[in-house]
Length: 243
Ligand code: ATP
Image (cartoon, rainbow, N blue to C red; front, side, top):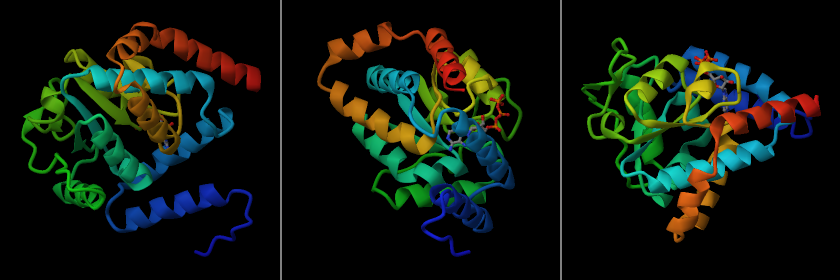
């Protein structure tokens, strides 16, 4: 469909078309389209911009990724289609591993998403032929890579299911979640919750990684001074005031 450039919702319509196309090509599960719709409605409440509490969480996330020994970025279909290149740039900047990990898992979709990401760099993407399991999650939701999410100390997830977030937290991992819904279980359970749109959030995290990289003391201070529940509260107040 040809979308007129002067349409007031041009960006949103183009994004929808991109996701529908990815669905037709078998990269995105149909449930991914529903998840996107839910995200769009929450983005209205934020004024479709990165609000100050989100920026604070993005900086704290950058610090946490830099401070971790084995950080992993977990990627699903929506994230790969919307922000695949930013994921790779963030993985290079930290540096850390990238794993394709799907709620509606098929080996075919894992491969397609991994190939999509690998087009942006030489970095090998994990997730194919994964055999380890996140404890307390049924097959195939719990399948993960031994060298990736299974042995990670910090996992960044975006548009993630609450059950899986909780399961990761239970294993003692720190979880950084990017999710536009501040009320969902993922946002409530994560160690750091970034309530922002994924294509806005990732470049901000990269910016903060570059800034904090050479300054371990500031990195440590940034983590110590961040309180996730306080920040979520600030975010709710921000939405209430702007409404
Ligand atoms: P939970 O299981 O955590 O309680 P849920 O059932 O809403 O939440 P899903 O529908 O599986 O979880 O996940 C989709 C989530 O991703 C929604 O909370 C939605 O707001 C969010 N989301 C959708 N699109 C984006 C986007 N582009 N950027 C950030 N978040 C998004």
